[in-house]
Length: 376
Length: 209
Image (cartoon, rainbow over all chains, first blue to last red; front, top):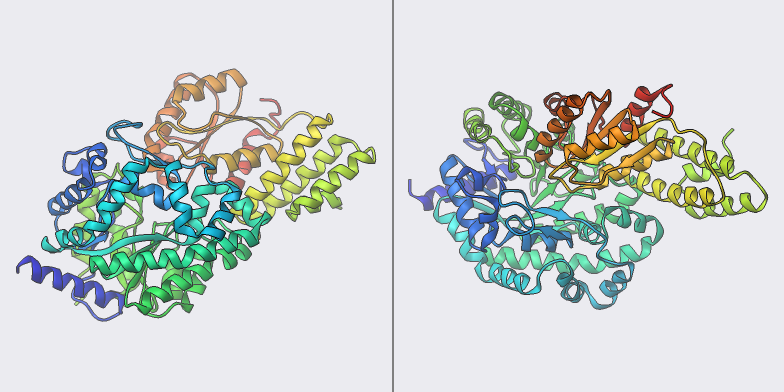
């Protein structure tokens, strides 16, 4: 089978699983940006050196590993330049201010001020970011990488397709809560939720439509089926219920509704533990989303509440990849396949397989997905 | 029965805590007694967290209210007397995440432990030096990334090699029982309140050490 046919077959497999239709085999989607470089003899500094490098290194790692249907969020653009736009924070750069083969790290600090809420409310999110981003990333590098991403979204997606892989999402956005949480720093932002809730809410209301518009634009340009919708500090395990119901859930619902209305699948990349609030997700449209956790949300509870409603995409944990054995990995993959009984399940690492993933564990993951994931 | 100040603290009513502290001091109440009432509020907050009534955001708010009140009362000579014991805390080498560690530090201080906070990206030798210097009997290590596992292991080994009779607890997003075993720590703290409970078990009756 040539790569074009392979791509079509894999894309259809992903589409069917999200729609809860029968498939021959459960799709295997990679989440492993930091794993790739070492696996192909490169460093993280190499991965961060040019905008093209993440694409080349990720494709090389996927080819070497074999057996994957696609990648969750397609890699391209220098990570230490891209990441500040999601976290509104400075990011330590391997090969510059961190050792060559160490992981990039978000240097979370209170860069955004309380007054910045007024700027967002009065001038808009885009105008705020123009003033703000130079505080957390070199403006020339930021302009270069963002320009590269906009100009190359289609070409990057096609590079994956030409190899037969499905680039599931070209665009990554966050639930608006998490942009502000990163910029203010978590402790300060959480205090804002208690002290100046109306101001925070007004800013979130301004951010939401701009972020949705950006996601739809990039996704249409790249021709990918989904948008990666991230949430990390806004999980139920972190936020008191009355705050979550006001500052998190309504925004997530609006993002999902807007994307689904455009025929785009929201991949809900939800780190931390969301178990407490899984019942709310029944309000989202059935068979239109994937829930992509990091190993902390209770998979059995998810299956019990949402197993017929939303596809589970995951969630072999970072801890297992780094500290477990191939048998641990195989057992977990088998367990999830048996739990979901072959439907509504995409097999993937939880969050992002870490930099110190043992290669034999990643190889065991793909083998196990093929061994246990045949359902037809 | 809990005082009005204790309940305001427990209910995270920041302005009421500030008003009651101010009013109490103006009325001649003992700053140390007011501080104890705030600590009792922190104990209730810990209990509410354990029962699922409170969440992490509540602990952060509680820590902030307590920190401000405790500073005001300390400035007036308030003291809760001898602490329940000494703890050394830090995020291990290679990891710069401080939020989880900071929450544990705040909750331990709220529960009247003397905490030496070494910050983030802490070398094993710094943990050893801090334990020697303070005589702490408990070490808490935090890590949010899987790359923290090996530095945690190295730190446990360094503490053992130095012959220090400390109990070691670890915590952080990717840390599990499997990791605790790998690292050689005495216990895993799944959240800030667990860390306070572990310190309580290990330091019961130890007092200043």
